[in-house]
Length: 296
Image 1 (cartoon, rainbow, N blue to C red):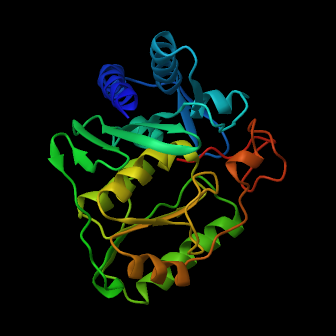
Image 2 (image 1 turned 180 degrees about the vertical axis):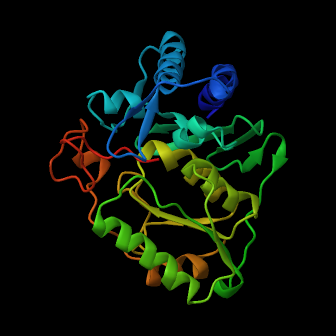
């Protein structure tokens, strides 16, 4: 719809504006706070950028709703309704940002009737704007993106992350998954440190698959559409239909590669995003002091 195209263009414009704040802070000393674990960080810049993005969008589209990583961490209810909703990760790759590792992204997805209409991932340091609109293809800046189409898992390069969960069950599951994939065998494993960029690498053809357990909807909602519009496949890690609230994802170059990964990897217990709506669900796996784990 033309209406959503205008929203998408506005989203890309404000992502570029917000990236100036991130790049200015990138080399500066940062005040770092912990969320769920020593690997789950938040900085003043995360909070500032999210407020900047939401205030800009709200001024233009006052009836729209929001799901923001830092807002949820602060206790706001996480709820995806039929209403137009912006799903925002102000800095995907906060650990990278803190350490000046040059893969830091702003991720913005836009859903209507619980269906993603467009996704934007801006890799700030690289100055790469990945975007897709439902039914209209995927792009990096102005270049059309196409997944590799690789059908053979043994010829695949796979991207994943260890993530923020550091309890014994999560660590054992994640390392066993990596070991089992390497035994398939696949050609290699990579980790960039930002789920959004990890996932769009599948859309570029630079990687053949990405999988992860424990991330959140704001990490992957935008990238999932970008992968799908590039001709790739997005599933749950059990091989069923992708659900952005499940906190489990496989993105792949083809269905055979996605299904083969689903046969190998296992998920550790992890509460759905919509079952942990205010970040304070004691059934959430990977909690610290009652705080729901918030991803990388």
